[in-house]
Image 1 (cartoon, one colour):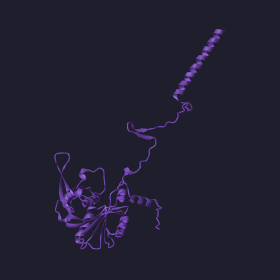
Image 2 (cartoon, rainbow, N blue to C red):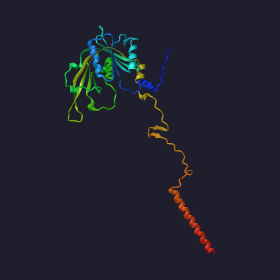
Image 3 (cartoon, helix red, strand yellow):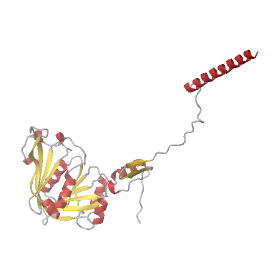
Image 4 (cartoon, rainbow, N blue to C red):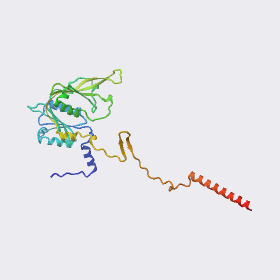
Length: 315
């Protein structure tokens, strides 16, 4: 029987709460690692991905001989690394005669493998092989455009799955608003066939268009590569429903004394306690009290004067 240890210190408890699954996710960190055997092309691909994800990625350069994501029991080390680095998406590179220049991209849920996509890298071109104006080089950590071109991303299941994984890998942190002048890069994914996707990285050049919205031009800055889908594994329906849970699915906390009506809208009840004005003690300096005293004095003086007049007439 496993013993579950609970944190005793508040700092440790807060750190574990940050790593726990959230309904509204923050930016996903990427874990980049390699198998026992890799090629020069594959090492360059992993380095380029780490460069593009700089600031939001962790790179392991040691060889890992016990990682086999698609096999039962081969994901133990991968899940351990995910827990230690707090990464929710990983890129694993390996090279063999059967599967040359092989990349496995997967997503994690609660530090367990959620889904997997295996692709082969072909026709790779690094950033150094492109010539362009260095002033157009995208800034590190900038928010990218991501374009998916082709009907295959809507019709073919393998490409649908690859689109979801690439979107999580490349988009960075989710934001509500963004400044247009800060957009300086774009990833273009083109479906060439039912199992082949051309991925390229471009810089955005803003030019005058005569209107408020500028005209954009794409300048290819690299890297670029062909991704050939080999295998993929989808999550089961139970796990998918748990992962896709949103804040709207949570029961709303009942608000006291507030009800909603289809015609009148939101109706609220306000309870006011009984005001015992007669028992309230008024201060001596109150204007009302002074006026009452003056009126009482005048009344007493008038009564006293009337009594004297009566006494004088009686005599």
